[in-house]
Length: 118
Image 1 (tube, rainbow, N blue to C red):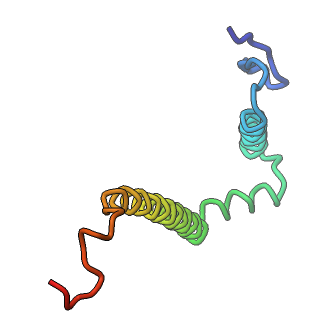
Image 2: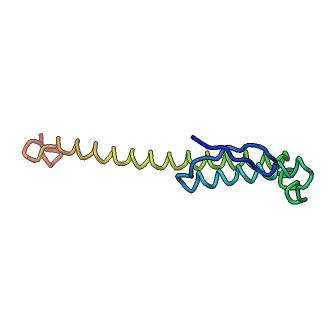
Image 3: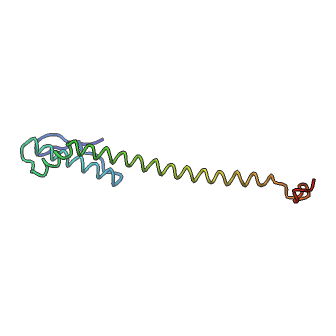
């Protein structure tokens, strides 16, 4: 279980177990950074760059850009899936053609080669 440790602001903070993956560690550091900036904003000691960052993050333009990126990612994923599906379909066609060709008679005596001979 996580243990508590106090910070400079005398506020208890949950200490988490060590990160298991780099992504987990990065997410934890991001969360801690956000917490630190939040404290500085609340105390009035945040830098202008910190204010500008959060103002940009909350802007309509930023939200629209994020929505556009999400849609572009979804489109790329759909295209990738379509390509993979087409590849699978082509493989299935090859298997069907191979199976059907095995039904073909190997003997040419059953079918005349000359179309006028019956």
